Amino acid sequence: MTALGLLYPGHSGEDDYPRIEQLLGSDIRVDLVHTDIGVDAHRVDALREMGSAERLAAGMEELRLTGAETVVWACTSGSFVYGWEGAQEQVRALARVAGMPASSTSFAFVHAAREIGVRRVAVGATYPEEVAVLFADFLRAGGLEVVAVRSSGIITAAEVGTWGEEEVLTLARVADVPDAEAVLLPDTALHTAAHLPVLEKALSKPVLTANQVSVWEGLRLADRRVNAPGLGKLFTREPVVQV
Image 1 (cartoon, rainbow, N blue to C red):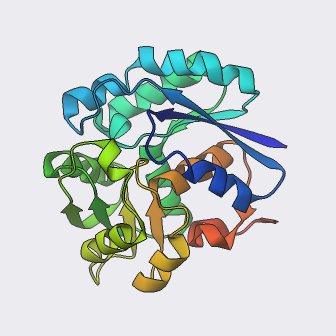
Image 2 (cartoon, rainbow, N blue to C red):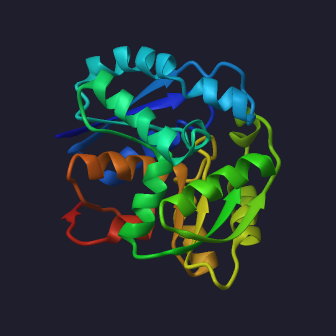
């Protein structure tokens, strides 16, 4: 049994995780602990507070009891708003508190893009433009080429959590451009786990989404590779453990 720990801010798209766990197979457990979201706003000041060391440490106190082997801060905006260096320090501090390998969703996107061999990406963000631009800057710092950024201008995670397949598919299609080798949808409040096959079929290219890459990052930290095609191209890479 491989036990993955995720710290998830508030309550919006967290039901993606039991779905992902089911698709991964019976020997992988996904343990989720909710952290205090503070002010639900896609604003830099609110996002930095949401990702503060104190809030993550408080969540880790509960997560440690689950027996998790790795921990991922399952929040994209609450990590990239610190910039590349600041986000690195955030996960280093989390690893020290957790006593286990740690990462965040922002780094998961960079690692996942490398895993599937893409460099040119398009971003379909639910965030306001000024926040979406910070995510693009983060990806560039990680060596990716961002060829397009589309922003939906949504302020709260609560609103993002109400989106269904039609809205998610529209966001991905609007973000996509011919030069992009993959489309990235960076918001863990966005329900995407059920829509990945539809998204990749519609765009004819890989789609990386926040909850998907967060779990994959936990597996990467645990040195696991799982073949689960229902979770998109990211989960069909070799070497694999067939499920």
